Amino acid sequence: MSTKTKMTDTPVSSIEGIFKDLRDSFKSGKTKSVAWRKKQLEQLYKMCDEQKEFFASAAHTDFSRPSTETYLFDCGVIRNECNHILNHIDEWVKDEARSDSLAFATMDKYVHPEPYGICLIIGAWNYPFLLTLSPLIGAISAGNCAIVKPSELAPNSAAAIATMIERYLDTSCIRVVLGAIDQTQALLNGNIDHVFYTGSTMVGKIVSKTVAERLIPVVLECGGKSPVYIADDANISVTAKRLAWGKTVNCGQTCLAPDYVLCSKVTENRLIPEIVKAWRSFFTDNAMSSIPIVIL
Image (cartoon, rainbow, N blue to C red; front, top):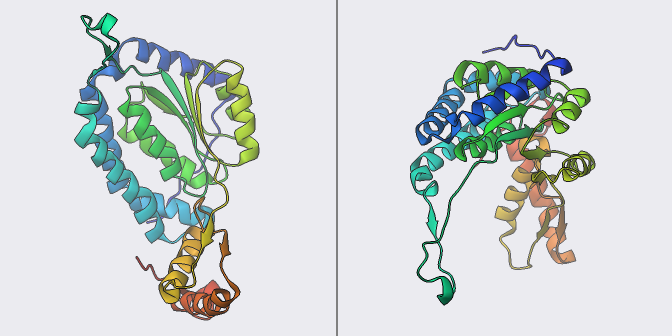
């Protein structure tokens, strides 16, 4: 299934109106309803189930990603997360009783969960659906409105997200803004209550500094280094296969991909031929023209 959807930037001039509409929806109390939250999660599950081929085609157009990886690591993970929250949300929204000192023993004390308001979600290109829609699951579950800003570096995937959110979810509470730096700056300077950002450390610092000036809470997922320590008594064949898989799945564009290995010289001499052997079993001798084999 191919996608003809093209990304069209959201006019910066319209963003203020989007904030106003979402703020009005949040003030109405609509998103606090557990029934509303469940409905949106069910629709999000349905979207990632029914449109997985559409999403996979968009990701393939953007960066030649094998469809299987979108099915498993984007749509599959999102569906599992929706199911998990649907199974637990009734318990999570309850007040939590708290004990205190003897002086206040006669008083009832509890923590009452309340949503922030409007959450801004800035996604990344390498897992264009997972890293954009997974934070949306959390925002919805907690009873928030949300603005989703997919990465412009995966334009077909971003357009696919915009098209399907409009089709499946409640757009009076959940909106998509498409674009690049201008749109992102307008969003960060808008009337937001919480930010989820996934991407580079450089941009993460900009996001953090911008929202810190207004004491807006932010969650940053900026990746990092992932060393692998291999002991001399490790099963080298199994270890090599896992390293080779982790380094090449999604073309290595994963924050948890193995970055470097720490081992003895003896283990190094045993490991390198096994990694080469594993890669050949995945991709044959001509990786550029082969169809990758998924080994779980």
